Length: 103
Image (cartoon, rainbow, N blue to C red; front, top):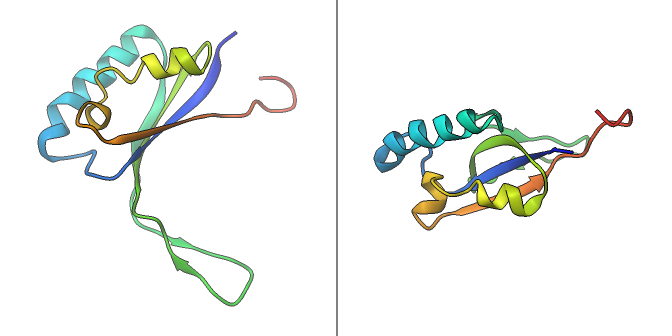
């Protein structure tokens, strides 16, 4: 049974610079494998609270990719070719919980 995972890219630009050509090839590969579920860059914003303060957002997470894989190890193997990962950057992998109906 496949599970949903999200790759969170930390730091650097995921939309421009040296990574641009690599992204189209990497995403095409994920699509060919049938595991790509979406993704994109993450822009600016703010953090809000019902309290009296708000603070700036973390600049560390710059983009995400949602994929399907059998387990965490299979998801890790899908990092091959990821431009951030290949450039020595950090990519966090998180499993996305299933809804209560198991879908």
